[in-house]
Image 1 (tube, rainbow, N blue to C red):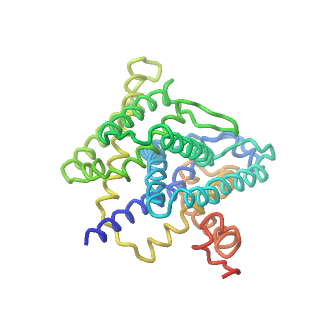
Image 2 (cartoon, rainbow, N blue to C red; image 1 turned 90 degrees about the vertical axis):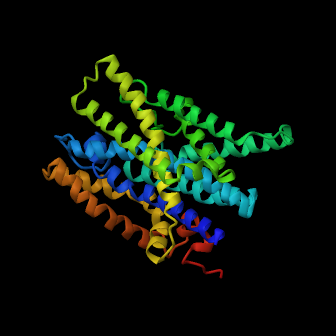
Length: 361
């Protein structure tokens, strides 16, 4: 029974990871409205770009609190799971194929289609950082085995240290006001933002090896408090966005601290919800988990092209967002079934064992 419960909780986290990837639809539905060169990239003349609706900005802000931290945290969690079940060599091969080769392939593809400069990361900056994180993770693990093999670490101290690192690095990531350091081009690197996401990754590996913290935050009373804190911080951020003065130093300080706390509380709350859901895998959930990585890789193509075309035809901001929300899933799934599901490309994106194209048995 205990093993079944643990499996159900892992399924919940797996579904959360898939949901985070599928939410790229909402994140990039208004991409043409805030990516000023998207029309040029798509080869479509765009003259006047309206601002996104306020509700879209607020929804995007809430999703941004937890989506990328969840990505990196669960990457660490499932890395720990894979090491436990299959060993370090299996993890290295699997991540080389899915993460490194997947990044190189789609980095080349997006730049061939949109720019030809082979420099822009687009939304693949997540994989770019993840490749670097895995290199550091393997290096640190190797050094630990050599120099700290007999040293035992206090788990609670590790957890608190990582959360503190996340807090202070996130402060640096969102300072100055309303900025966040994401690498835009191949070769870009910010030590502060990299340390921030590496800390989330390490927290994920820690949560797998020691379930104490995740069990604690999954308790109903603690989970409710995390939820209340997340809501209050979101309301504060919304009030600052609507009524605040971005030039005011107090406003800036409140925003930066509020964003940092909101990111931590909301991420832990979403994680607790998924972990305590005790989700039983069925065919529908399994399908979304299966296609989520492929969906993440492909979805920016229709998001940019459809958005740019609608803008050139004179559609308003709200119409662009709504139509893109409907059209992105259709065309992304179409590309998945045409170019991935029954092709050798599935060996990279899904792995040979899970591929539907197995000519070699």
